[in-house]
Image (tube, rainbow, N blue to C red; front, side, top):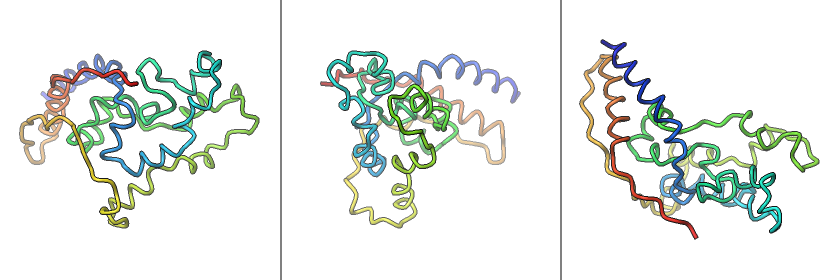
Length: 204
């Protein structure tokens, strides 16, 4: 029986993940739950990647491929979703509390390989790309982890405002049942995919 659910889940996800990954929401949507990460990104060169180009370069695909890879999603520069994937389906709270489910519906954990798709030998920079050192420049996780571990006063952070959809109902998980856990997770994916999604609004 478990194999039947596994096959059904695999078929649903195989057909849906490529499409889900393209649903960008923009970096402002990440700010409500990840204020530290947003602040770190906002002050980084990634956030200013598109604006660093000249007017001519902004129209040159050889430049925008890396400086604004998601222009087709109306997202300029290198944003959160450039590295982590379009967040429309993994952003709800109940999805983010389940890392495996979040990855199933589009959340990406970027690696050095993905960084090097732009930071490679064809880059105009004359400096060699040192992944370990450059990673320190975009550290947007340490402050958030400290806050969650109680090492940062939450009152010092911006008020959390979230316009996410309400949690979809799920069936209870039968304790100790691998099949029950799988069916529970699959139900959440199906409910998430069936939930109405507000139309995208054009960004100025």
